[in-house]
Length: 595
Image 1 (cartoon, helix red, strand yellow):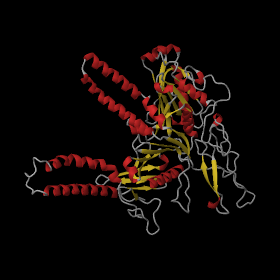
Image 2 (image 1 turned 90 degrees about the vertical axis):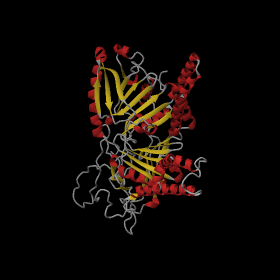
Image 3 (image 1 turned 180 degrees about the horizontal axis):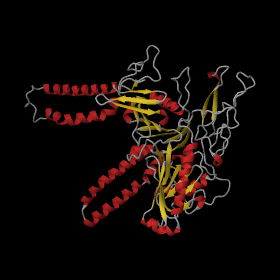
Image 4 (image 1 turned 180 degrees about the vertical axis):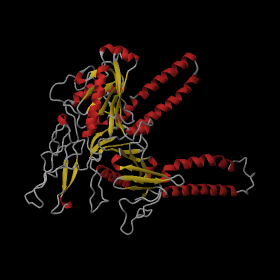
């Protein structure tokens, strides 16, 4: 039990030690001692600059030299003493801030206490952790430090921020938190030794593509249009002064280019038992981990200039990331900055391993570039084409066994995918024109984020049918969804024994219901069978399993030296990489979609 607010537990000391036995798993610990300096160095520089600039200029100015009350030569010594005093005061404040900042990781919670005058205590449940990020600003990289962020469902504000830890310590702490959040039982003999889960890289972006995507983005179009307008006005009115208004636009475009390059450079995406891992960054680097089942909605967008290269951007809604408009917030919500169609299909398969259809490739192709009712899409009725002359055949939706797909946009093509169990609420909207033409808009609410799920201009009876049907599908999908601790063993019922100690009695686990209500993946398998993590192993009829040992299969690596003669060998399980494969029959829409 914790003591009074701000007090340490009675069984630990402030340094996290637990007597001569050494540190405990749930002991209170502190961040690195130079963390306040890494966080506040720019504030220190700003204070010294603005406060001391005029004073130092007056001390060493030729006009005021010798006029002061102090003897010559004393002023530099006084200036140095004042500077040293300011540095010592700031260093003391940093030290006090470090001393009162400590954290604790238990089997169920992560707690952080901070503050001197105004104390703050934050706590996050491990089974509610939505994502974990390791962030290294440029100065922190120089000192080998990293910041650890734990995101929970609180509309974008980090529940826990540990800044800063040694990089190795941050990685070990992330592995510990993810293991406990997943429900993995620690080794009773060595509970502090938690190895980081293995991973397999699935997407890697070359730097040239990131640069090309920035050049072909909307910022370039804005720059060209602004240049044409400025030059035209300058020629017509014969005044070159108007060209100065082009400078702010140029600064904004350059900043946008730098943001795109800094957040997309060296992008890597991998799959692991912990979920989806992403790494990126040029000066400031970030390593994100999104556990299974935390993605609430996914959007695939193709700007007009990207069509020449066949590129797409994938963004997601994750509880805790929120709808931040900053470049950092947009980067955190980006699952694939710029990728080809194959990479988009691979990324979508990581989020939605079971697409709920036997034609996932053809369905996604119709959603990305299709028009009309191909692959089961329901579009705006012809009578309402005047409300969207260019997009009425493009706007539409399709329902599979596991997700709802919404497509829209003619210039900026967009496909939104919402898993059924992530639908939180629905609303139906109809304005005066909608009533006149018999159409309505259906809005799906998920967690806040950059993805907006909306069905525009749907036939009103069809919209009502989708409204009630999606509510029923969402409730049923949530009922069948797995536990929050995605790797925690699910207890299975067993037939009663014929008698205690009967040597002829054997306990056989009962089959676990599968996603469709039949026998699950454990049915018919002997006890001790190792399966991929929930959310990545079951691909339904849309995927084909590769041979054992081939890339993309689940591997169980035995360690004979780690097991005794009477214990089963330890296993390191690498989940298979889910992939969508084309349907064996022909498709109504070509794989690359209509042009």
